[in-house]
Image (cartoon, rainbow, N blue to C red; front, side, top):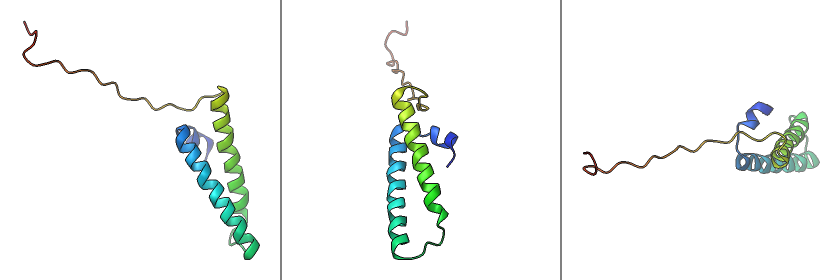
Length: 86
């Protein structure tokens, strides 16, 4: 996943993505020890993506480059019917 795609995610989504990547890396390391991997370069790409995600989270924490914040919709109070229409 590219950096600009990762920047569009919230911090909670990045942490969840990081956990999934760590699990996948662990599983690949176990498979490598027990058998031959079909795509051994996948280990490198996962390690690099983990580094990207950690970098983005750290940049956000330090205030270097904040993540894109999703804007919450503004809810305007509805006017009551029949009150003060004069």
